[in-house]
Image (cartoon, rainbow, N blue to C red; front, side, top):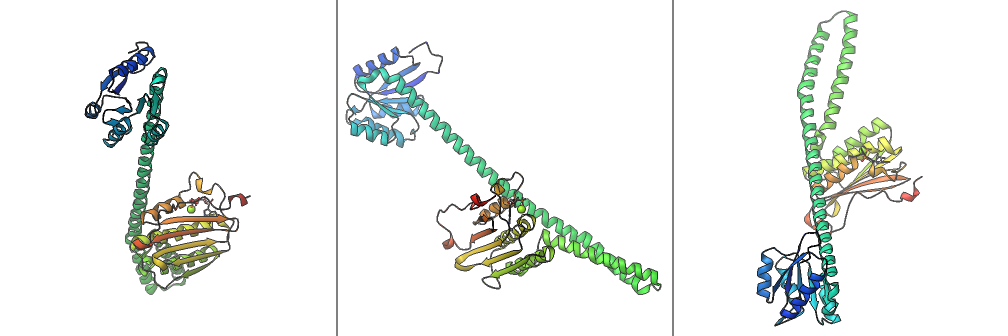
Length: 380
Ligand SMILES: Nc1ncnc2c1ncn2[C@@H]1O[C@H](COP(=O)(O)OP(=O)(O)O)[C@@H](O)[C@H]1O
Ligand SMILES: [Mg+2]
């Protein structure tokens, strides 16, 4: 209608049974600066037919129509999937209750016919609100999509790491382990045939070094892909605890609900990696003197709790740029339907993995996440 604006033309569908009122709307829009096209329908059938063309940006609807109301029209428009199309009720007398009800049901706005001078303003505002809503919905969808892709990437990386570890362990076993075993046999042969003191002394040193190399390759294989897991989670966690004690001199007490905790292989690996990372973190960051590990499978939930009496985590610990240990554990836990809680104070840190083992043990929609450490204000 107006030629003055360079904004795109607003395509308006007017639902109105009175030709006079339609002319009034046309007149009000002509006087405004709004660049628009106006089409008229007066039945629900024609309204839906026009909307199905997808050629409109907004609907203006009279309230009192023959046999139905503007609100009935809105309900039908909404049901047919055009709920994000701005819909403004334009009426001679809508009444406060109906106006409130209209807004409540999601109508964009309403305007009394004797305030027609505000029509273009109301239309522009309704379009703006709907555009913002659409942009937000799109941004939300993109965010959810990118979160999903990130979670998939993390899952893929974890799986690749496990696979790579298994491959390296196998190569160490086949190549290095095989070669070292052959050297050992040869050295033993030399030992049986050598006579002089000098050769025997060198032989002994070589045997000691060889024993050291065999021990090291076995230790590396254990860390890469723990065959100890074949003996069950309790044995594997006890093995982790005792090698940690030997390495660091810090005391570890392992408590468990029973001698053999039977959980699926993937859950077992997640629990093992959680204990392993928990202990590594303690040796790297905690300055603790004592560690408790608690393994429990009562009430259909596996819980693994690694607690230290160290100095606790700093307030920004979970946001460190290159720290992915605890984040990785959170992803691993989620992959088997569980979650990880971290709580920390200046007198120690607890890392708790929980994995429901049966569908009945699944929690409601409680939001378990990697929490910020508790009692942050206590940190110096
Ligand atoms: N048991 C702990 N005691 C004190 N601080 C800890 C402990 N575990 C983790 N942290 C803190 O949390 C941070 C994040 O840990 P993590 O995600 O495992 O990454 P990384 O160990 O590679 O730094 C660590 O850098 C450390 O500051
Ligand atoms: Mg770590």
